Image (cartoon, rainbow, N blue to C red):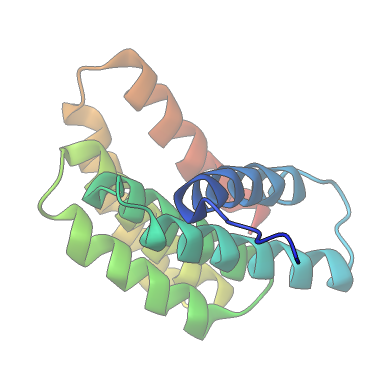
Length: 155
């Protein structure tokens, strides 16, 4: 008699959503990424987001972060249309969340515009992100948003 294998899909989604998220960060922070690294970065970011969407404990905040990370990856990989698509999804969702997440969405939109070579629109979104930054009271959120805005220099 063959042994039946059972899979705890929620545990699998939890594992892969976080593992892929962390792997994406490693690639984002990798100096001198190759084109193969860029491809892997966006594939792993999208995979993380997909697994988050399958989780029973998914929240709008987690999805906002996932959309932001996918957008950021596409911006770094020089794919502005896909970066913009995910940045807009991030913004739409983040409008209902704490201000920090909307600030990050504007940062993602700025990154997508920069990847597209639209410096004027990039500056408009940076201004919106900085307006939110100025109103944040949580020091960790302020530091994270400030770092991400400055990170646009790498895009």
